[in-house]
Image (tube, rainbow, N blue to C red; front, side):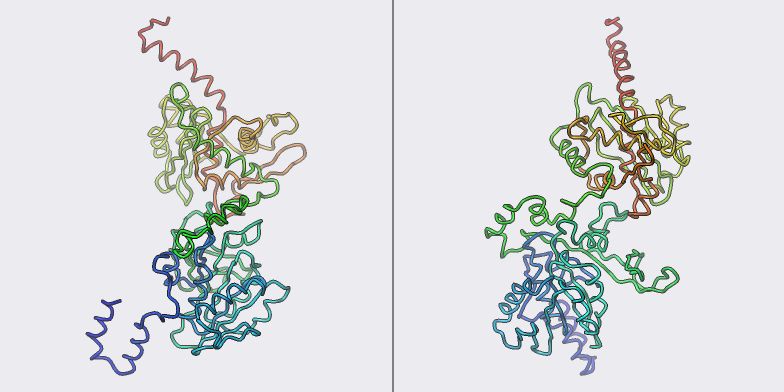
Length: 515
């Protein structure tokens, strides 16, 4: 700020009186009434964020309520802060009075502060139709405290009255929230998908601005940048969004108290949600989800607990290859060592636009002449398969839409196609009671993709949601998960082939003395 003031002094002599007054207003420091805590870097970043719509918080104790009150008192003229019920606003009200130092200008009946030309109101959105009471009442700042407890439709409705006629007055919305609990508030993961949804194809960094248009039906369309965009034949203005996570350790006033111990005493998954700000922990599985999330989490925990295999088990068994060959998807390789998956290898589709490029990627990362299981659905992997076969490698082509004559492990049901068989076989492998002790890398995107498909019965056959249908429903592909599923295919045959080959190699190395 000192450099800016120095520059201002250098040019003020050339400015008119009105220009000096306007510039002084812009350059004046924040009022001493409230300032973001300097040690709380996320709170400082949130205060200064340029986002039109900001999600702040995640963990308990990150200074969420203070941010809302502080913005209302120092940066805006007409503000409203919502919670679910009026009883929930008592703590917010008390904190406002504490910051003000007195009740001057505060009407407890109306729950509104009028002081120094500013208006700060409190509202609740619990009762049916409560949102309509705010219709036509403009505010340049709308804050939602514990936004995950509020209904999406009500939040969207009151946001419709965000506006100001005051020259130069910025308008913005801030949602301060802990992660959703029990399925409530899952709409936040859609509104802020680039930060919260591991399936989102282009993840965003904390505080990074992304632009979105909201369609007439309320759905979000992410667009390349600001300005107006044609959406469904209608010109819509894109607004910026961002997410800034905050945790207990960011708040200097709470991190040295016993508040952490109180949070740690809570049951899971609430404990992890509030302590770590984890929007993924404890999400409810979809009805008829193919692989339960708990099974995936257990397999990833085994990866942490069990190091990479050594000795005979250190040989790569199979390499699953999901081919993108251009486009927005990735080409993904999944190396499998017995029942232990190494970290996935990913390349952009634009970097694997033909068979030789995919084959070169496979040859670079394949070890021990492992069996290569490659996706041939749609013909994308055919050229790569031919190049690998020409190198004398064992290659298994997989067409997910092909038929299947297999049955479930208990022989009760058939499979509608090969994709259904392969996904269900991996479900059986992850079964904590009768599975194969699979270890998966700790990759949240992989976990989300494995948990994405659902299944249904078609007669006596299991039919698993297609990759295209998953993409349409979630807006993202399951490339990572499909590579893992491919690697598990014909694993037993690959192990059987590897054992005699290994014996022959040892015999040759020993000069034939074993013969």
